[in-house]
Image (cartoon, chains in turn brown, purple):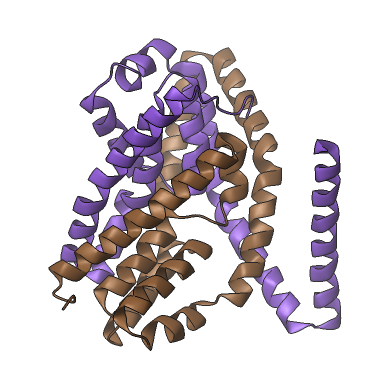
Length: 160
Length: 175
């Protein structure tokens, strides 16, 4: 987080020193772009807040912990696609689940879909890239996550 | 149609906020929980987004179109993918930050397969996230995940890019 602030501050400072006018234009562009996309972000935040009420991390752990491995992979990938969870919540959760005996394969399908597939970020993605591309990209990402999860299963000797 | 859509959206948002506020007033627990979710995620994003958009603004003003075209454009080759994966490694947040960045790159002349690689890579190989991940899941886990997923991301991006280029895909204007 702090590195983002320092990089942004430094970049702004250098920019102001070199050309004050250009920097002002940049700020105007930033502002306009930000304002333009706020409605999409608001839609996403509303969806996130509702979905996370129904799909809590406790629920994820009960559902993916007590299943057959392959069903676990599918269930985890569905949860991962629907939910939106920052890494600082997702990985500690996975660490706990790992200790509880959930397989690497299942956890990788959860984390990879969390990272790559964004049903909840759909309102934002479609603003920039359109509905069709958004759907294609998410479907591809879902399958990539499944392939990754199978590979993890192979390398950790979890596939019989 | 578009106007009507907007009205429905505004109305739904109004209903949502009315629901949250009244939940807090009458102490309706599920509504309060949803309100807390909304606030905590908003704060999380407000920490990142202003910086991200300032950097995007500076990028648009200072970086020349020719240099983006040269390094990430049609004739960029393997170097373009490598560069954009490095850039993705330093991206913060998640997909919602990667989209506006990718959009600006595209507007400056980066080719489609490169920006899809950027989006995919910024989902899976942000450096701080990978370090955090490996501390919980082990280095072996993170390495296998990266080694398997990065080539797949590049491959699928090239395929998607070619497919869209053939169909004369046009990106949204003026975002």
